[in-house]
Length: 566
Image 1 (cartoon, one colour):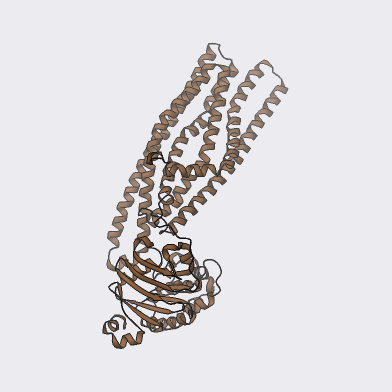
Image 2: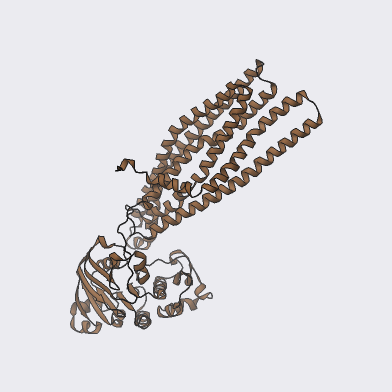
């Protein structure tokens, strides 16, 4: 039996997955980049041989062969670098895209996994910066191997001149990497902390943008901005710490590489002065000492990038490896079925029970807004079945036996604050690009005046969050999208709070007409929508306290009359 300490770390598993599914591109990139490093290292070796042979054989033929050899080496350096980096960067970009999509998929299904309180802004940072830095491992490994090739070629060439020069390069490289490996661990820890603080700052600013108008309304914007400033300052301080650590690492690496290059040059000069190596070998050694600086620099930076990639992978694992909130069942609801809420206790709901028959149009009049929000959370599966007591049945099947995808394919719950996306009116109404009921949905939601107002009609450009639309226009656009989906069961939460009374009356009639024969539940206090419904359920203190038509309730229930009359 394996213990917890024996289980592979989630971040390490993510890195292994990235390496495994890009093995072909990495092999090709390693070969090309190894050829690049070998050719670049061969340049000073060729210069040394040219000097050696030119001094012995002073002929134009030898000079021509030498120039041709250098041209071949330079061409190899150029082409191998170009195509090697092209292969690796394509694989890097593709892998980063895969992780972004995977993290985003988890973020868009918050009920599917327990993401340990991560907010949308933090998940956004993980899906962008951390995904990119994790995918960098695709480039790091081939560059590490190719840099090793350069060091080995240089060490072998110097050993052929004098074994002491080769040993100096090998011992020096091992010593440099040992020192930098210790420093890279601190970089990984500092980077992971920085990424967490930047993600928290992103989440804070996302919350501020969403709640900016309400904050201005009660004068809380200054306190909110102060809160963001504190979070942002923490992120800035950590970024400065990381920059200092990176600076110390880079400075140490450069200093150690320079010391090794100087040691090789001085040792070669001393050997040449003593007649133990020739002038050509001296030229080769000095040239290698200069050229080896680049692969040594690259080789010494690789541990840092590995630690950064691991830190980012650990961040992604917070989302990807989070345990499921609930295990979805394999069943699918019957088409056109009813909706039943049986003894649900969640938040302010106290054993809530009601049924909406297939094809029925029912309205719920909540006396407490919080109870409406809790009911919407349960129906939208934002609160998973284990999070509440009781049972919700859709088409005769319990939600616990259905996958989230099956529930949302069969039942659409449209919240009052539904998001408006950057794009056009058309893409907001039909994100998939097609909808059989798009014209009917536009007419039923009374979005026709918005379409007619602009020359581009449905192709009118909409800014992010509907910034160029009024509150009523945004709400009608959201309603049009819900109606255009044409799902078997539709749940609307306060769909007309931002429109005038006349428009609200028309929308209520249109919804009843368009959804005739389809199961529809509207949670609202709008008299127009309540009057259009087949029956009204009164939700008070978490339970249904009354049930009748809107007009009968107005005539016989004083509390209801006070709650919904305008």
